[in-house]
Every structure is written in structure tokens, then in C-alpha cells.
Amino acid sequence: MNDYLPFMTLAIEAGKKSTCEDERSHPKVGAVIVRDGKVLETAYRGELGNGDHAEYTLFEKKLNGSDVAGTALFTTLEPCTARNTKKPCSHWVVEKGIRQVFVGMLDPNPRIYNKGCAYLKANGVEVHYFPEKLREEIERDNFSFIKQFSANPRPNGKADFDYTNNDGIFTIGNGDYIFETKWSKASDFSIHVYNDMPSVKTVAIALGAESFSEIKDATIYDGSSRARTIKEGEIVVMRNANGYCAAVKVIDVKDSSRSDAHDQIIFEYSILTDKTVDFSRVQAETEI
Ligand SMILES: [Zn+2]
Image 1 (cartoon, rainbow, N blue to C red):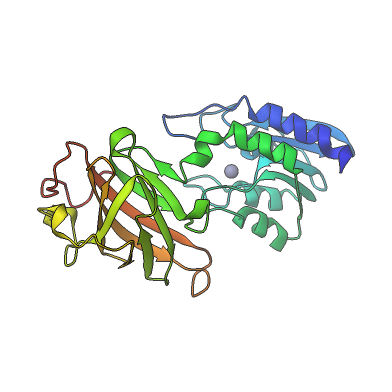
Image 2: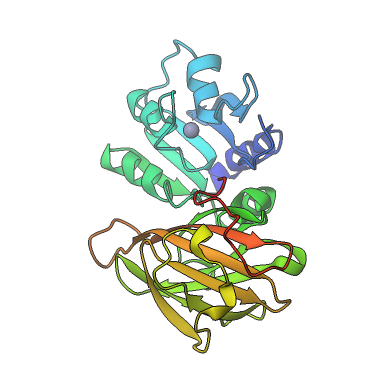
């Protein structure tokens, strides 16, 4: 494995040069293609085009037309499995006949997590991983990208995360109106929510409310229990340690021990940053 370290390091160094095409947080990804111990080419995210993935840049732009069958690819992030318009990188890898892929870290996005590696393995590609020490460096380089899957600082928004990670905690809001929401598995259509974290004082189900605007007074609901079990489509209201209110609507729950491929919760939320308790002015569909 030590023979491969220089290529891994080269991929990490390339990844550090990655650029972001918009204000959202994107991963820093570097990729290196090697044949018989010699580097053929390197690439990083955004190197030759806004938002271009590193592997796409390698295969489509830098090595276009070259025969790379049988080579080894070193990439700091597992190749993606879904893209809006372009072919996903994992498909490029398989089509190009790459023999081995060395992956730095798995994608923290629950929609992709481990799917890239699984796709490669299912198609006969050998998958190996960078050693832990190098992976830690990649995780440091991608701190804000990883963080977005456990936090959303905006007052209104959406969360989409794996509730088996990070002790089930997803932080919404910031400053005085921060809420560390905490979740755990109940079923594939419901989930437990807790007031365990210091920032969250009470959790209550807004019984009967289907949209935030139906909640005229967030304080009327029963917040006497540490935990509540909430179903898809229901809304939980929370008060935080500073007296701010948040409403959280559970959109979708996935449960890997039942019918689903992975564990995931999607919710949308709204925080009353003026410290009132009336959500009736909040649009039913918050801006996401
Ligand atoms: Zn990709």
C-alpha cells in the first residue's frame, strides 16, 4: 500500500486547488490516473470548467480519446452516482475500463454515501481506500462541505441527513436562535425527536397542523415530555434555551432495517427569529 501513497498525496494536493462555482459548499476533490506506477494526468474540481467534477475533467477533457483501460484512479472523494445533466463519474470509471479505484473518503451526502463504491464493485472495479491519516486530512479540507450534512444555519430551510450519524443531531439556525435537533429511529414512517441537547428546551407535536401557517401559538402544545414520536407529514414545535420557537415538518423518513436502502430523514423548518410564537405568517412551503 505504501507504494501508492505518493499518488494519494498528489490527489490530495490537487484537491486543495478546487474551486466553487456558487456560494454553496462543494467538496474539494482531486483525482490522479496512474498506469504502471506512472502518473498520466491529474485534475481537480472546477479546474477546466465551473463545477466540473475532477474525474469528468480527467476523462472527458484532459485524457479525451486516450485509452485508460486497466489503469488505477486515485480520487479523494468516492465517484458520484447521480448528476443533473452530465454522466456520473462512477459511470465514467466503469466505461473507461479503470481497473482499480483508490477512494479518499465516502461522500457525506446521504443520497450518494457508499453508492459510488458499491456501483464500482458491482461492475468489477477493485475498490481500495486511502489510509486513515490521509482521510483525516481530506476531511479537514472538506470541513464545511461535510458540515452541511449535519447543520443548516439559515432560519428557514431544509435538512436531509442520515440520523444514524452524529448521534442523530442536526443543528438548525445559529446564534441565539440555534436548535440542536436530535432524532432516532422509530420506523420507516415515523421518528423519535428529543429535547436532550442543551439548546432545545421543549419538543411538542403540533397536533392537526399540516402547515406552519396553521400554528397561531406555538406554546399551546404539550412540551412536557423528553421525547415525541412524529409521523411523516406532522409538525413538531420546539422552543430553545433562549425562548425562540421553531417548527419542523417531517417530510420523509427512511429506515434501513425495514424497506429502505438507508437511514435518512428529510424535514423542513422555520424559526421565528423575532422571538414571537405565531407561525401564521410563515408560508406553507418555506424557501428551500
Ligand atoms: Zn462526479
